[in-house]
Amino acid sequence: MTTVMRNLLRRQFHVKPMTIDDVKAQKDILDHISARTNERIDRMLLRRFHNNTAPRTNTNGNEIRVPDNTRAAFHEWGQHLLRLMVDKAYCMLYQPLIKGGSGSMWLFVRSE
Image (cartoon, rainbow, N blue to C red; front, side, top):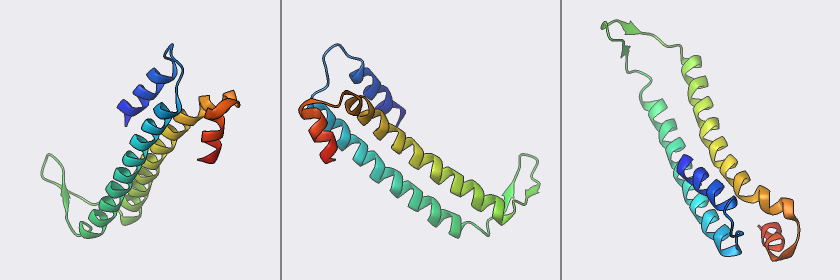
């Protein structure tokens, strides 16, 4: 995800202006990453429900008890953080284009 964001910034600050084809290619990449992120979140949910009975141990071999509400909050926080990264990447893609507000690029972005 960070590689995609870095490439977006490089492309946006490049001397040559972005074209519609550049935007479409970057959007396809972001759509693919969004789908993969949602799959990972679904796997996290499944793992959360299947691993509730598994005891945790620390390096000393002592069993660690984590309350269920704490574990649920942590998993929910992780889901929100993953989705936020994808949303941020979409914002990085479209924000400079919307700021211009003219030309065929603007019409393409508005239709999306």
